[in-house]
Length: 601
Image (cartoon, rainbow, N blue to C red; front, top):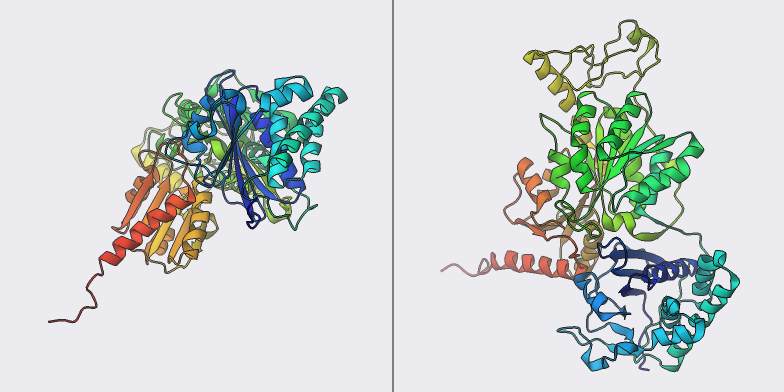
């Protein structure tokens, strides 16, 4: 084995058929990494079949904090080539990848079906046969793979096997022992067949530190309960269903309840009713469900009722790509309303900040008495991250403004105020009875057809959001504030751009990055300040129509050199390609100055 410095970062990608335990193997690997003190991220992807089909996961392990699932794979594991190739750009192989594959495919190492690339090393392993010989079943293939990984890449064998034992504990000691034998066989194979290049990961200096492992959906639901949400009304839909499942398991402990309704419309209708009753309420869905919920969102808007709607984006339109990531619901979130409507739209960028953004969504909903949409996405919602424990003392929880005794003497629910926000009562509050309906209303809630009153109420419902656009804490700016090169990215793509920024700065590029957590209403001032120094820039998003770029152009005169870098879902961005795009912008900028210092004739 040639001498090479140990790695500080490894990206594993695995794929196989449903039932091969690929995702289970990824879970065990991530748990072992956390136990060893590493930072880790795991994403998973499936075919759209209800049962069976292909499945994959990628696990990134690092001694440093991780901003995204990583770029090209360091290690690729193919239990089935047909399934592996279905994931294409989601599992990119390069010349530095070690490829491990099932020897039973009988494909020679120099004939593996990867077009246009020669991996660092290709290793056929009789994974299925080893599983059968040691555990008595091919279902232990994933455990053999974990043994190979522990042996070749320095992931603690004790920690990996501890995770396997924990996962299988309820299934009996016999099964645990069988998997121990399969794991040992994989590890022994690795030891007997060392890699050509040392790829052991550097031991972590934080081994033993307490870390959480969770995904974006569970984090969102936990944050909602912390923020005081006590009612969830919804309908199962991939990839948001786990939010409802978490509520079902836990909200009753805090006096809350869950309604799994007969459809998407009934789910949000119940949540609107709960909010009218004075209870913080939430619903969650994905793109097709958001389409169905729009009428009820309009009701909550005109009745000025707090409500949080989570849209976990997936590929669309219609059923689209239900198990793949995309950022193409932005227009639906911002514009899916008839009439003059503003509804705040927020977006987390990773599992960790999903907690803060969810709490913020409830605070904004309660303070401004409005529906708020959280635009999560399939990657954030279903990827797992290692996290430090969350100190909830740093978060303020805001409740809606209730009427005072004086207000209730002659209560007008929609009375004009200086900040356009009126006290809101609830049923049972003496003197607080009012009509909340979808028809335009006077200050008291009485129906009206008056154009004058309608104009006044439109002003009330829209102008109340002006202070929200001044919230600088809802925007993150990294890099040199006066840089001529710039990037803007939101959602899960922001993590890729954060790493691209670091790489670009290391290569000497003078560049900055803006990450907006508030997508709408558009904060014109924040963007004008950011773009003041910018000559060239990229709006980076995973949507074919470059929706965020178009949204910004509706509200701003963007510098002429700012352009979209956009693509459809299931085609993830890599940090390196973004850096390459920045170099192209820099070249364009420099070409414009060719000859500027030449002496005048």
